[in-house]
Length: 89
Image (cartoon, rainbow, N blue to C red; front, side, top):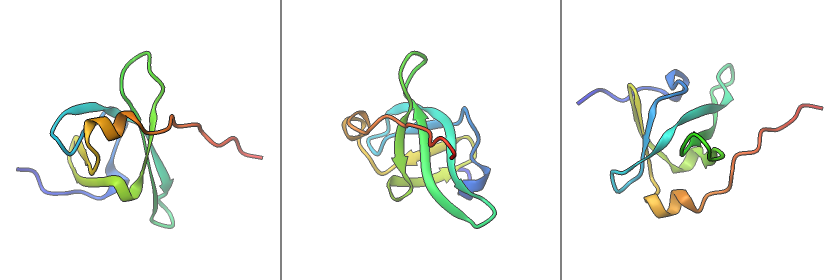
């Protein structure tokens, strides 16, 4: 099994799985400030025509190369709010 990696190496397209082992989507965007090492969360795209969901950092579990596990069931993930990017200004 791959070794865990830090949040700053997560890239768009990585697989995201729920706590019950189901694929729930892929990384759309990593949210945070790598310079200050502040991890806010993830925008996870559940499918091509669906809006990304916002997953707060405290609900992110193990991160290994190419895959992020959430501390949320598939149903809990589905109930998350859509991710809405903050517009500067």
